[in-house]
Image (tube, rainbow, N blue to C red):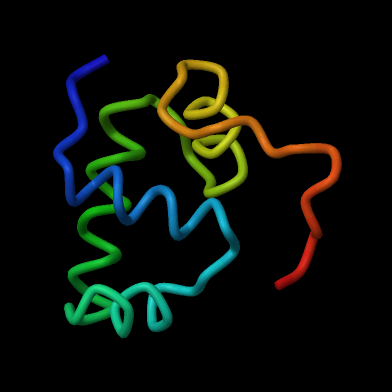
Length: 75
Protein backbone atom coordinates (compact mmCIF):
# COMPACT_ATOMS: atom_id res chain seq x y z
CA UNK A 1 0.00 0.00 0.00
CA UNK A 2 1.27 3.46 -0.87
CA UNK A 3 1.49 5.82 2.08
CA UNK A 4 -1.45 8.16 2.60
CA UNK A 5 -0.76 11.86 2.90
CA UNK A 6 -1.75 13.73 6.05
CA UNK A 7 -4.68 15.30 4.18
CA UNK A 8 -5.84 11.91 2.90
CA UNK A 9 -5.75 10.57 6.46
CA UNK A 10 -7.68 13.60 7.67
CA UNK A 11 -10.36 13.07 5.02
CA UNK A 12 -10.45 9.34 5.74
CA UNK A 13 -10.98 9.92 9.48
CA UNK A 14 -13.88 12.28 8.84
CA UNK A 15 -15.43 10.01 6.20
CA UNK A 16 -15.18 7.07 8.63
CA UNK A 17 -17.18 9.17 11.12
CA UNK A 18 -19.98 9.31 8.55
CA UNK A 19 -19.52 12.86 7.30
CA UNK A 20 -20.51 13.66 3.72
CA UNK A 21 -18.06 15.18 1.26
CA UNK A 22 -19.76 18.54 1.78
CA UNK A 23 -19.44 18.29 5.58
CA UNK A 24 -15.80 17.23 5.32
CA UNK A 25 -15.11 20.11 2.95
CA UNK A 26 -16.70 22.59 5.35
CA UNK A 27 -14.58 21.31 8.24
CA UNK A 28 -11.35 21.37 6.26
CA UNK A 29 -12.18 24.50 4.26
CA UNK A 30 -11.85 22.75 0.91
CA UNK A 31 -14.41 22.00 -1.80
CA UNK A 32 -16.46 18.81 -1.74
CA UNK A 33 -14.90 18.02 -5.12
CA UNK A 34 -11.43 18.18 -3.56
CA UNK A 35 -12.66 15.87 -0.80
CA UNK A 36 -13.77 13.45 -3.51
CA UNK A 37 -10.32 13.58 -5.11
CA UNK A 38 -8.68 12.80 -1.77
CA UNK A 39 -11.07 9.89 -1.18
CA UNK A 40 -10.37 8.60 -4.68
CA UNK A 41 -6.65 8.56 -3.87
CA UNK A 42 -7.38 6.77 -0.59
CA UNK A 43 -9.41 4.12 -2.44
CA UNK A 44 -6.66 3.66 -5.03
CA UNK A 45 -3.89 3.42 -2.45
CA UNK A 46 -5.77 0.97 -0.23
CA UNK A 47 -7.41 -1.08 -2.97
CA UNK A 48 -10.85 -0.46 -1.46
CA UNK A 49 -14.00 0.65 -3.26
CA UNK A 50 -16.37 2.02 -0.59
CA UNK A 51 -16.25 4.27 2.46
CA UNK A 52 -17.18 1.36 4.69
CA UNK A 53 -14.52 -0.99 3.35
CA UNK A 54 -11.81 1.68 3.49
CA UNK A 55 -12.78 2.49 7.11
CA UNK A 56 -12.50 -1.20 8.07
CA UNK A 57 -9.18 -1.43 6.20
CA UNK A 58 -7.90 1.64 8.04
CA UNK A 59 -8.86 0.22 11.44
CA UNK A 60 -7.29 -3.15 10.64
CA UNK A 61 -4.05 -1.46 9.56
CA UNK A 62 -3.84 0.93 12.50
CA UNK A 63 -4.67 4.07 10.53
CA UNK A 64 -7.81 4.70 12.59
CA UNK A 65 -8.55 3.87 16.20
CA UNK A 66 -10.89 0.96 16.74
CA UNK A 67 -14.23 2.34 17.96
CA UNK A 68 -14.87 1.84 21.66
CA UNK A 69 -17.82 -0.32 22.65
CA UNK A 70 -18.92 2.51 24.93
CA UNK A 71 -18.71 5.17 22.23
CA UNK A 72 -22.03 6.61 21.09
CA UNK A 73 -23.07 5.72 17.56
CA UNK A 74 -24.31 9.24 16.86
CA UNK A 75 -22.97 12.50 18.04
